[in-house]
Length: 209
Image (cartoon, helix red, strand yellow):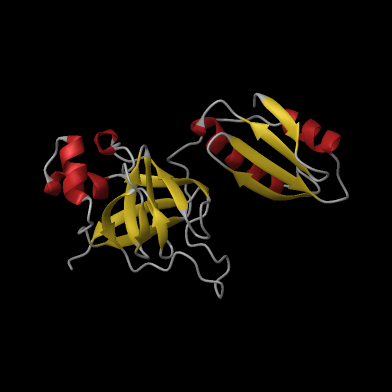
């Protein structure tokens, strides 16, 4: 943790140095809350460089800050048993050829490498059910499109920088589309509604058209 900032009357924003530190802190906080070490804390919201900690009126900024300072934050262990989700993908995205060109790989090698990695949800945002997945092959780190699309189909699997994401609903977006899935990313009748929560492991499997 590098800095604590008050976020309203019932929140503390923890600034971190990088995304791995965010993921390690978020996991530590989740475990501490489950073990009763963070009384009054009601929600933990990780982002790319921060974790928002919100609490109820039984706690305060000072009490939460003291609790945070007492935690032993350890690096996230990818071998730790965690929830895992398998997502079937048809690799026929409109930008698949462009990703192959940018990466210097064949289309088949792009597909193989994307499906060979084990991903983890770092954080969520942008839209309900949208998860930012890390852990992919370094060769598939590609930039966003120069011109975003006004409509990206629901279920599109896409790349941008170090992240893989899946669009849970139709909407605008500038990520490179490599495939599509029918997996229900967001369902208000499910508890929790989001299929992919922070910390969840994700594996992509190839599905024929």
